[in-house]
Length: 318
Length: 318
Image 1: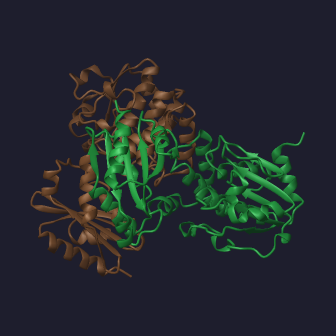
Image 2: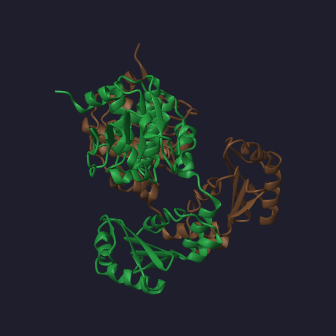
Image 3: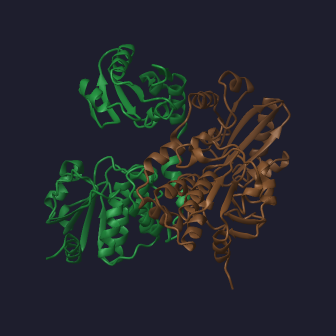
């Protein structure tokens, strides 16, 4: 019986012109896997288009980034559509119609929630990243990984594991070693992906750290940023990312609260370290999330928001 | 002819009681390799003492940390002394006499400056860490790496590569994969080694970020902390580590200057990104360092120090 990998190989071998799509707000794994697969498919003589309407310029160092199309003329130019790192059709967002209209489709992904919405679906949810699964696909297709492909795939593995911090399997390291053998610049990629920041972002962090309070014997860390901060510093959405971790990383802190004024609401992010179930707290305020990372919105004042959230956390503190 | 690894195997096989030493101010690689080797040698029936007078408690999560001795009674109790991660005798500091007095000695290290000061010296300067070299030694000795050994060795590799950020070879990843196979908790180790911080340290960072200035069209970042800060916040030496990187990581910055008042002097740290040779600037002020990371002391006022350093950097700015 033909395996999924056999079917992928066959589907690609009978196609000439291939369209690659990924999810909206694409991260390093989405962009890395798309460009990595593009380079690989070009090596075996395919015409390949990568369509990503909003590709974050922080990944512009990746080889092939300039070839990414923001739009395409006609879906009829393609006989195969490949969706990468996208767990369902909706996540393809404005690109969804192309996937529905093109005759043959493949999905490669690592999300356990994947809907298997293509003709051929390669979904291995044990893998750290779609890029890690792409390595298996390329091996099955006998395409050797050159430096360009490696740089793209390594970036996806790096971002989806937080720099080998979580979601990392023994194979993840083994594959990383194989990619490093091609001579890619490990340090450069790390710096561009994780270290680079902006003045605006650093100034916003500085304000939040200034306001950092430790409550309940140092078990709760609390800070906030206002709409005025964001306006004065000309911050972009996303500039607040990671601030919540500064509180969480302090010795003795169990829960870190980060509040951000947005429009007429306050967006609350919670991070726990060891035992507090913040998804439960989030659910009380009609939000969502995971056991140790959750978020929700509040329509009270900043001070009321703080008090209400602290009261809920206190119920679980040891 | 017997290889170095043969000689290590023989030296250990004829010894019963072994003393392990490492360098002063021991880092993760020093403590990880010492404890990792201790576990391994105990597995083959040796009596092993790890002597580290000042072991940073941040590594207390490592198995065997509680067995570390701060002092020993008599060197005569040992027939073999092994120095790990220490490039010369002086770096053994107060433990140096033991190394000199014990009859048989081994050095395992990865510093290119190693003085080969033992009877048997295994120094591979290509490796990321002494822990990485220890894997080779254990393989030569046919000692299989269990979970305790793996946790110690992984920690050393992680700290000496800054979390696979620099100084990372393809083999580093391959070894990390092998260690991960033992079932060690990759995420926990990462968090304990890199993420955990203290309130004092976060407050010091906050003050430094408040004072952050961008000079020369944003090509120079400058900030400082005073002796008063350190006194008020009750900071320990080391709490300032990493602050200089906040300036360096800002887009457009070529050189980051971090000044710290200490006693009647100012300690200056410089970090460059792409082209400024800060070792040259450091040399002008009688300091030392590398191409992109250097430091020195100044006996002028804070403002004079800032001006003098900025003037030197300006000469190299593009």
